[in-house]
Length: 569
Image 1 (cartoon, helix red, strand yellow):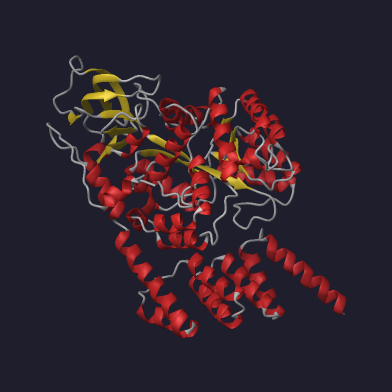
Image 2: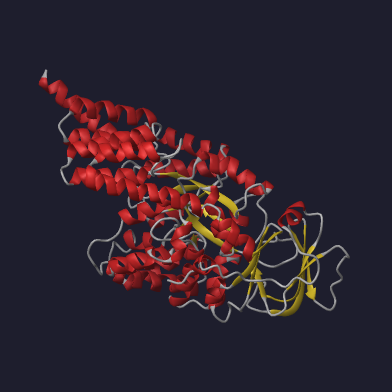
């Protein structure tokens, strides 16, 4: 898997020739000067074409003029960017992410991704404060849209699990008031709850996207108004009944086309899953690549915890079916969107979007069709379903100035997306060396925390949890924490190995680090339950439930404990 960030990690800085005055970040934010890309080949993405020797003028974050370089007049104070030998195309869009951290946002821009849709689990701070900071320019990142995730019982990661139809309607209203752009329906929703969500969403004028609930089905989802399916895999799990049945492709396509729905095939994620499951050593090779250093240690820890232990070809036939389905969708005119599911499953923010475009081409789409799924079609989707959103996705006067300058023509080879010279988002221009600095800024801190992780694991293995915890507290700085998911994974390994007291000690340490996390108390309760200390298990499940009233696992344990207690009397 080739990545642009691997190039950045190797300190290869792409230089820009700027014959006029140098464009600074501060100037582009202020909007006091027009910016012009001069003598550049433009790929407008409105149709499949290249316009050579153009000048594109940007002012106040908008594209204001496009024309032959010889005929466009530039004001004296225009900041000119020399585009000779380069190509300019609209910024890319990742329409399926789960990133909600400020420090990871420059990763998107470094790969030319100027728009992202968070498809659930974003923190309230990210949806409100961080998005506002991005709009104002005080935080560097792509434009952000966000979906509020609603699911049925059984998924511990859900944003909200309604207990009745009234609760479902209240969840939709809450999401609308908090500024979410979409409702994400998940796959455990039951028909009555799903119907309430869709009906209330219509009342609140907010579109519903997401998975296909098996209990609801594809046809009913479309009939009730769901406007986007988030994975091609959803068709396989429901409409195809988990079988590689090519005879169902055409009917699935026709149902989708008639509904006017969009589809995010998410092939990059599934292709990577298929490769690493078939060959676990490919997982290790990927984790050793330089760009992994740009990710927070806890995300790397989550990935390592999910490493396949034995090779299996169980996803190979499914991937082949998903590619056939994706090509059939494209041929039938179903609008497709690029999306990666980053940061899950080895999907690095930004560069995994390049993987997604390449997977669309490998499925049989033309480069223009694949690039449309990353530019023009996301712009149409947002314009259709998010009232008042800025228009983007093509290089057209009046559209938002979200642009990528490339060294080669991606219509000839989509791998050219990895040859970024610079990126503009909302009229703010970044040279590659500026993006390199932004992407690398948190790496030293990541390395320090990773060293603490390594030391903790080594001491844990050699001397046990008491000494490992003591050593961490002695050598760490105030406010330092080991990643919650990493500590939990280590403790569960002990629990699965029947090292109950060691596991409990590590789980207790995690509750000290993250006293406001319902998950750490739930995990500690699991350990106490396994060690037959029901009173402590009950106390910690209750604590977890107080932090997250939708923790269905805790509810079930406490219900069973109450029944047993009543029976013993």
